[in-house]
Length: 428
Image (cartoon, rainbow, N blue to C red):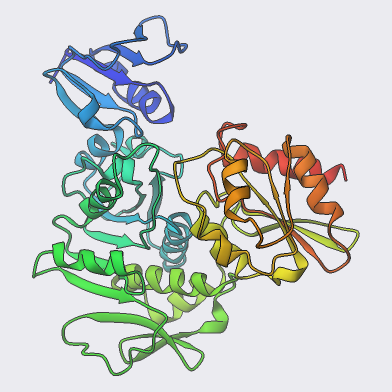
């Protein structure tokens, strides 16, 4: 299509990048939005009722706008689908309910250490379309992909990694089945798949891949007696990480806290193994310090340590985070935007916690789920919640911001919430 009409559903990060990439090719642009948004003067804005009734030749949906909500005769696509169709290098796609950012970051770090030309984008906030025309065939693009981005994605990546699947985004998806189906799209047509064997829903998706697909399972179980002719396995045993029968690196190389991060490292190793030598693999894992906003120590004041894990936007992420802390000496700050999830799983995950301080749109819902489990405090303001959590702690204790929720009830995103947390802690 040349000199045609393009509709952008929403004008957030992804569709702004679409506009910037395609604006010089003679297209006319229309932004369609539920609410008024500022757009450049050359773009027509349509907002309010009926904004999804399109008439343009091509429609770029925003990630959270499900394609079946859009009417019209034009081709419906997305920034991610369009970009991956026009980028010719090797692509490693990573999805899952938890751990995507950590696994993607570790994959890229290991590839960098090996001296390969690696790039990273997608759900981390850097649009993949920005790489169009920049990458060469020898490059490797690590793609962090959400269920929103995958729901209408046709086969695009050579290697697919699925970290796990737990309920998420029920405020957007029509059902958990739709959510899982979206995640499963990453497996279509791939040459290699790396799956979390310890997650039953992830493991079950192996039935969807072609018989020619090379499957690697990452697991915390000892698989030394497995049949390595059928599948490959990456797993811990006797203080080492193994791939099949080969010890590839000592577990002491993994600097990240928590058993779940051992599994994340196994997933990353499974993804990069064909491209990286053993010595550089060990050095890459040993020099990886983790990602921002994931159990990140931001301060120690009066003997109390403060950790930012604001990226924990689901109960399963918060449970995993807190499993790495001494619970009787830990106060956790919970709450935020409600994604229509159940918080009942927090009951087991927070048993023994020093206290839970809850603030946000879903605070009452979390408070009810934690009834009788631990000392629980409801707050009206985020500042108050940090101060109360701090006041409950003494020397040797920890305060962990791990919302088990999205952050856009009060904040633009989890990064803005983290910055506010740091500001409040500095002022204590």
